[in-house]
Length: 195
Image 1: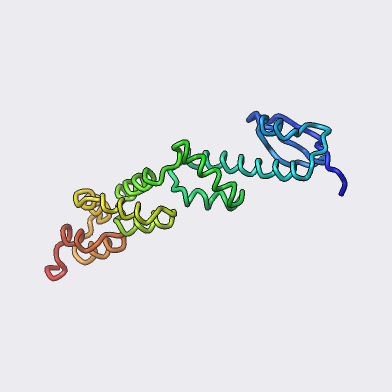
Image 2: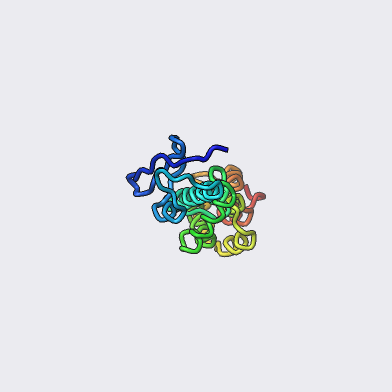
């Protein structure tokens, strides 16, 4: 196998290094990682160093992407790990989520609470909240705890949003479609026998 050579190291606008291997774009790393691995112009890195650099680059990219994603909106750890793994692989995604969790940027309990409040404000009920939390990979025990914290006044307020001006059977159908149970429908629309 022909030894491979680092042919260029350029500083990017974000102060990370774009490194070329054999004249072709290869990876982007932070300067400390590149120095630790001995990646400099004219060097011929050992295949183990090449593999380590590629792993470091994937992990760094996953961490940067993960931070950007949680900066835009809350994510559950399972949901974030799945998104990151599609591009950067399972190991890099797992490491990024663990780091973001340790920093407090990812918190499944906070995410569950925020998602529940958002759905309620949008007129969605417990069944939809449960579905969305489960789909995001939130632990089932945390899903149950989040749903148990939804009290009747908050559910009724959300159901009124869902109802709009609907009453009677149309109201019951709307509430069922939006994830509310019969108890909420009875409180707001009356008993089905009375309709």
